[in-house]
Length: 406
Image 1 (cartoon, rainbow, N blue to C red):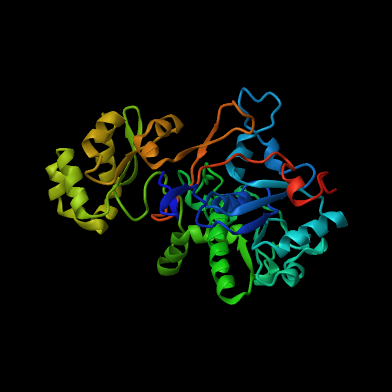
Image 2 (cartoon, rainbow, N blue to C red; image 1 turned 30 degrees about the horizontal axis):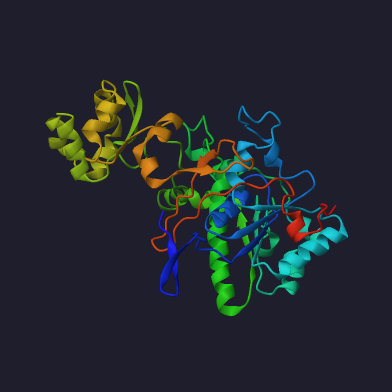
C-alpha cells in the first residue's frame, strides 16, 4: 500500500492513509443491511461513522454466523462484515437525555442515515426538518422500502419491507429463474445492497452541493425504486416491443451464445456479442461450419437461432473441464468459470486486487476476520486498512456520559 507524505524540516514522514472522505462525520441510525452497507462504503473511505444503536443493539449482531472460537456469540459475521471501521454509541431515543445527546452530535455532523419506516423519526421529534434547524448544511439520508412521502407518497409507504420484498416487487424476480413459472430471488441481498450503494452515491453528491452552498437536503431512496432501476431492461423491452421480460434461465433474451454452459466438472460463462468473438469461438471449437453459416452471421441471426447455437456450444463445453476450458478460452473471448468461495479465495486476481480484507479482532492475539474488501480504488488516495468493528456502546464515553443514555 502506498503511503502519503508530508514534509518536515526537509525530511519526508509517512502518514497513515486517511481516506478520501476523511473529515466527514456520519451519524448512522440504520440497522440490518441496506443502511449499514451504505455507511460501510463511507467508513471504508475514511468517513467517521458513529453507529447509533438502541440498548439491544443492531439486530445483525445476533444474526450469525459465528466462528468456532466465539462460544459467547459476540461477533456475528453479518455484523463484522458491514460495520468494520465504525463507532458505537448506545442511545435510547425514547428518552429526552438521549435525544439531547443526538441533537448535540447533529450540530457537528455532516450526514444522518436512517432506514426506519416513514414517520418514526418525526414522532421522536428528530425528523429532517427539526434536525436541519440545528445544522442547515446537514445531509439527511433515508432508505425505505417504498420511499418517503416527501418525494412522492407511495400507496405502500407504510408497508414494512426487506430485500426479498424489494426483489419481488421491483421486477428482479420476474426476470430471474428458469422460466416464468419459477421466479427466483438472487443469492445476495441485492435489494438491500444496491439501495445502499445508490444512497452512498447520493450522499456524496449532496455533500458536494452542501460544500458549495452551505445548504443540506433530504435524500431519499426506495428499495423498490432501486430494484426497478437495476432492471432497466424490463422497462425498455415493454416500451419498445410491448414485451414482458421473462426469466431467461442462464441465457440472454437478445444474445447467443451468452450465459452459462456446462463443463465436465461445473459451469462456465461465455458472452459473445461481436462477430469477431463468434468466429474465434468457432475456430477454437474446430467448427468452421458455424463461422461460415450465413444464418448465424450477426447478432440478429444468432438470436433467431439461439437454441441451435447454444446447443452446439454446450455439446462442446460439457466434454471438457473448467480448467481445460479456461486454458482454451481465457483471454480470447469473454469467458470465466463459475467460482464458489473456495475458488475465489484461491484466485490470483482476488489476491492481486486485495479483495479479501483482514479485519483485526477486537481481542488482541485472536485471529483476524476476513471480509469482502471495498472494490473502489483511487489513484491518488490510498485505501485505508479495515479496522475493528465496535462493541455495543464502545464509544459512549467519547460521545455521551460513560453510562449508556437510556
